[in-house]
Image 1 (spheres, rainbow, N blue to C red):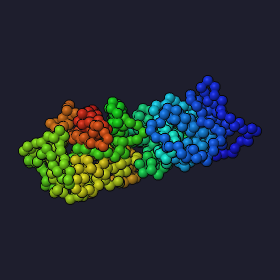
Image 2: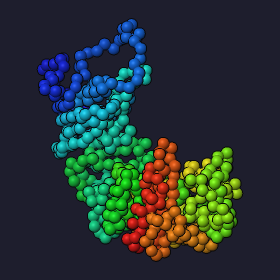
Image 3: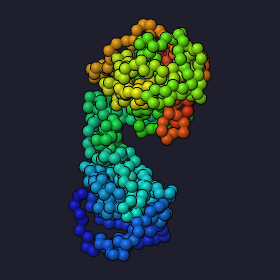
Image 4: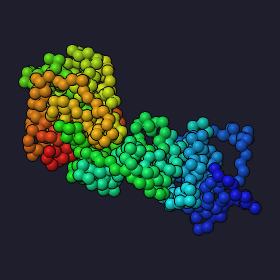
Length: 560
């Protein structure tokens, strides 16, 4: 990490403590001068023996909650070593020495971060926040860097020693484990993203679009005619790439020349979507145009990860749109024919029930769909093949094939082949089924037009890419009945309250998905109105009609 500077004399005493402020100034290899501010004791820098005495060996392993002193001392030992450029010592103060040493070494060598000041905040339990200020210097260009981070102290099981629990996010909160920090010429030039009307899209104006803009740059930076600048970037590792996270720019030292990429986003709908999701924690929504597949808005109240496009969540009863089309096509259900909806139904040794254990006696399938009767679907599982639902999702709705080419990273839904109780649970959007708002908006769009049109954010004419297609359409009879089911649900079923005042050609379906460890289910809602289709989810929100429903309905009211 750079060339070491000779020092005439090195002090081997502890740093001076003045008025509760610990000041350490050293010639660190590649790190420059560091200072750590904060109350409390500094880790003893005197040489420690690595051999254990017989008395030490006899001591019992300490267990139980960490004391305030243990948390503070462990945190300061790590931060003090890091600030001094003593990477080996800092890494040894964590519970993953190898990973910590690699990233901390790269902090100076690859990220070129110098003159760092670490300021320790107030401990809360086992967590210690701290702030970082420094300078990123590369090829004669420098720029200040400032951010906040935190660490958590844990007790090592084998000897009870308090150590910093290692995650890459300790070094910078935007890092996932396996990611690295690098400063240099950016691999891809910047892009200037435009909405459908030609206005510039920025994260400052549209807070949800940070990950979308990163994705656009990664895909189109080399194709849009721009020139790369000098940047500090998060370079994603293997696991982050599996999760389809894009490299992220943290600091721009010198501007590149951006290329221009036009998107399909509507500035009015995007602004409205941002406002709608901001009212609820962990809410996401997508609006698209069924006739073309154009994505008009995408918003998430939790920023950083694009749940609306990349989330992988059980969709609950919104999945019954796909399941219903399957049952109708298989001759196992018909909108206006009687259909069983008992309180309970056992299949594959699992006992399924309806919300609040309701039942519908002598009711039609339309009534079961509108009230979201689980047992109406579970009761038909025995008449289906294990791959029936998978084929319906793939062949008619274009899902679960991992072949969408939207313009930015997306998760294209998953409907795995399952058996017994898991297969039955998939019919009601539980089991192994996974979706996101983009997927479910596309499902409503397919019902509206009768044909799957792959959603896209950037026109395929920009880069001549091929959009995904479905291998078939559902029968005319099935399509007509599906529109009838969704229209009835919007007017009289579980979606009626949310859809009140939404006029025109409308259809909707609600959903609630139980998630282990959550007191409340995830609330889902998918609907269409004229040439708009939208879907949303509010995680840990409760019933979809009460949570995601108002978000979706408000956007549909803006017209098509």
